Amino acid sequence: MSKTKTRYVCQACAYESPKWLGRCSNCGEWNTFVEEIVAARSPVKARVSAAQRVGVATPPKPLSAIDLGEETRLLTGVAEFDRVVGGGIMHGSLTLVAGDPGIGKSTLMTELGKYLPDRRVLYVTGEESLRQVKLRAQRLGVDSENVLLFAETNVEEIIAVAQEAQPDVLVIDSIQTVFRPHVQSAPGSVSQVRESASAILQFTKSMDVATFLVGHVTKAGSIAGPRILEHMVDTVLYFEGDRHHAYRVLRAVKNRFGSTNEIGVFEMRGTGLHEVSNPSEIFLSERRYGASGSTVVCALEGTRPVLVEVQALATGTSYGTPQRTAAGFDLRRLQLLLAVLEKREGLRLSTHDVFLNVAGGVRLEEPAVDLGVVVAVASSFRDIPTDTGAVLIGEVGLGGEVRTVSQLELRLKEAAKLGFERAVVPKNNLKGFTPPKNIEVLGVDRLHEVLDLVL
Image (cartoon, rainbow, N blue to C red; front, side, top):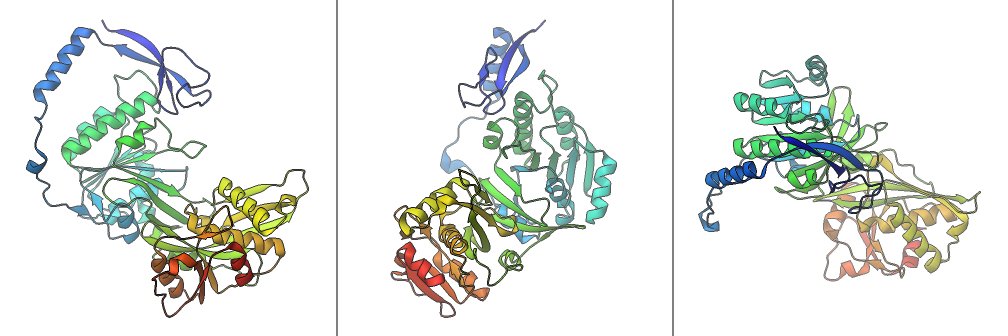
């Protein structure tokens, strides 16, 4: 008869403790420990199990003796999706797709049956009935004999059915709903997510199946479950966007088979997700000309330059402490840039509320968009419209200097293609650089030079 023991596991970092703690001593989060009951194995059984594993283990091989074979990928025909996953879906890969509720994760996974009509897709649903999935598939135009639906949450049953069906692609929606019977905790707990993902990983690698796990996110925006889940999978895709906007961004934050930080842009319609081949044109389509506080920046997302409008509003504060709000941009980075404006350029922003918005629901993270953010705030503060035909590219330092950026030629070609006449770039980027002929390139060294040029 096996004995049981109780342990407490932190839901944020999977740290285990023999007793309940109000604050995790490993990650510092509060009220994250949950109680779990596990079956204790006897030392004799553990030794026998270890000996058995040693007996069936594959002996080590020299690096030169490993045959890579021919790398084959499943091409969906959707350029936005194929680029994000590294040029196509890799056989034997385990991919985690995460995002807010209602953002379109299940829609994207269901459409795999339309993208891959000649491949067998096994769609395992743990949250919806087969009828619900069928209704969604009809709305999306997915009607293929190669799409198999299976409603189950027991991982052992899922693996058994997958071994019999021999699918090319396996979709589990979602990882927080499945469980392993020998783990005595509720589905979605740290132990269940970790053990379930481990079993699915072993099946994926042994059967060379491309597997997709749909994952939920917490209120803080991180993937629910233990952090080790992101380390176990080969690729982590975040589905971003606002449910009130039509555009969705599929971002790769980890990819063992391709480039990270790649994005794919989709438009959510009644018939499903449709790829946007030129997102810069879409994001700038509703731009207002002649209004203060508006600039255009060029951000590099992986290998793709994207032109986006940055909007700023600086207005006198009604409170003792001015408000700082940013949508689509890092708030701490905004506060740093505001301090540079006040210290180096003399703009008294300490008496103004500052609101910043990136149009289209895109999130900008690279420093090359600093120049556009600073100019947008200064334009709204002075109530002077910016040069509407100029795109701003550059990182802003604490001394008010404009620093160099990478892949300038790629950014300028995208700006020229969309009809921009001028580009304000760091002067150091122009050393030994031949600018394109169809766009005027202005090199700047200090922040005050930029304000004099575009305001």
